[in-house]
Length: 96
Image 1 (cartoon, rainbow, N blue to C red):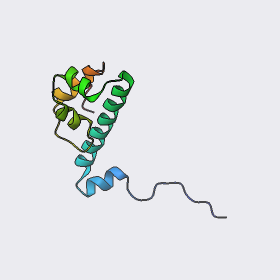
Image 2 (tube, helix red, strand yellow):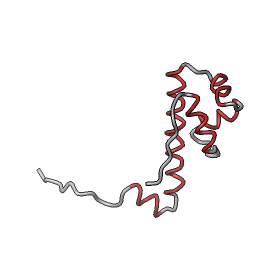
Image 3 (spheres, one colour):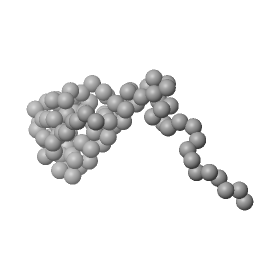
Image 4 (cartoon, one colour):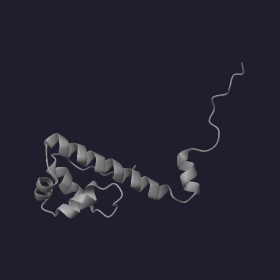
């Protein structure tokens, strides 16, 4: 039986996305999807309905739906912070 060298072959996913010119869009979409999931999970844990969550954020349910929709990218940092506060969390944004 042949032993295979376990070194990586080819490029990483990040390199491939960068070569295709879509790394920035893919990264933004992934971050938004994770945030939407985290907000949804926090709402479940706190037993918050969308109506109660929107009221706690002092915003409309439509705006909350944009926060919770992983495909909706047009949400301000202010809105994300209000959503975090509504579920008892803090939004942390950093450059790395």
